[in-house]
Image (cartoon, rainbow, N blue to C red):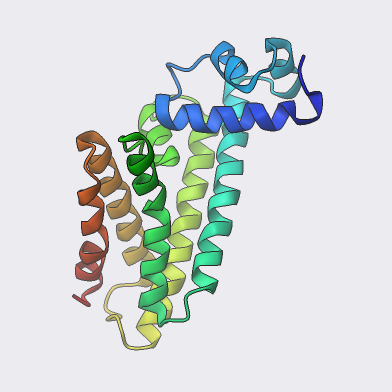
Length: 199
């Protein structure tokens, strides 16, 4: 069966990586198990279904990403707009790394799954919606601070601006993936500045 002590984590790690690069539908349990170096029985010992695995994979990915975002914000001693830019750069950093290491942009795990599963797998879609809500809340907090500091106008609410900004980031990452062009990522922050009225 392999190393049972870490089999569960290896299944989760493999599924996160493979779902991001291959998608959900085309990826079978057998392929996940082969990549993780475990037998199929181990998979069903830990997870009731591929859907259950995917929810946990999304949870784990977001826990790590959220920690990285909070660290990036804590390490940036700039004004709220500077911290917001650091958050944006952290969100798209994996895309730049992907392209430099493999020559391919793989896109956002959450965005990829949301597009693929728009008509089914309700538990996965529910969890993805919660992750996007968390992202919007993080962005809204910084926009609110920028509005209080007079760096961004307050005619539009922070939550509305944050929702538009997260959608803008997801759209730009999607286009960068389709065209496999990391240069498109460079336009994300200037576009955010225009959205916020600070360009």
